[in-house]
Image 1 (cartoon, rainbow, N blue to C red):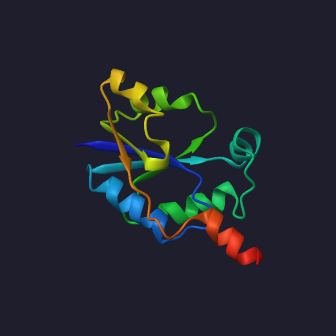
Image 2: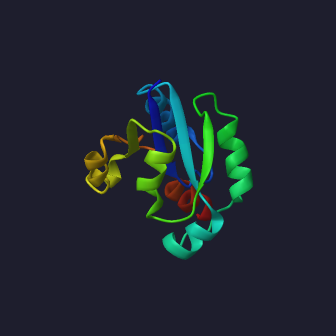
Image 3: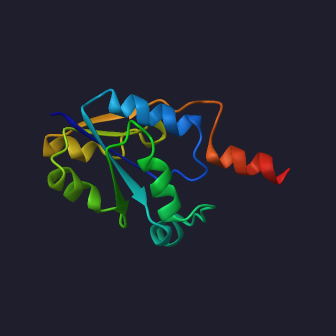
Length: 130
């Protein structure tokens, strides 16, 4: 079984999120989504989420492409996660290109998928504020 992992906040879930989850799942048999906790989002990313961690987790768990959702509490946990969950492929959006290539040294394939260009949570929030 080929295992894939991806990371994100997944706030204000939209079809761009679904696209990246679908494409990530197509790369393997089992998809682990590592979801940023509220504390991690605020303290490390300076992001305030509309939905709580538990609400975002529930939404992700209801998506057919997602097999497991676990919390992201630090930037450093990626190396540990790929070992603990026996990951073959690490997937992120292409806005992160090159940032996680160090995982290749751990025997993990690293894939940066193009984002859905016309949609983003930042754009949704901006549009709603107008």
